[in-house]
Length: 97
Image (cartoon, rainbow, N blue to C red; front, side, top):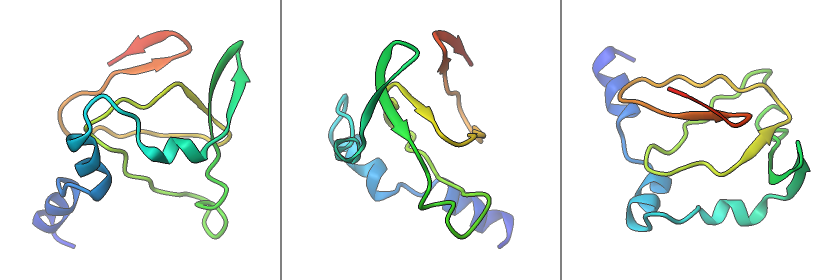
C-alpha cells in the first residue's frame, strides 16, 4: 500500500461514521448491545475486545470521527493515534488534548 492509498483509506467515511453524520448527538445502536457496569463509582460501558483478540495479540479498531464516545472503561489496553485534527480524551475526569 502506498501513501496515497493509505490516506484514501484513513479518510474514507465508514458506514458507522455516515450514521453519526446523519444522527448528530445520538449514540450508536452498537451501545445497546454492551453491558453497563459500575466502575470507579460511575455507571459506564465495559469495552471488552475479547473477539478482536481471539486470534491476534493486537487488534486495530478505527474509531468514528464524528461522535463522542460515552463513558467507558477497557478490559484491555488501548492506544489511540490521532492522525489529523484534534481529539479530547477525558481520562478519570481529566481532559487531555
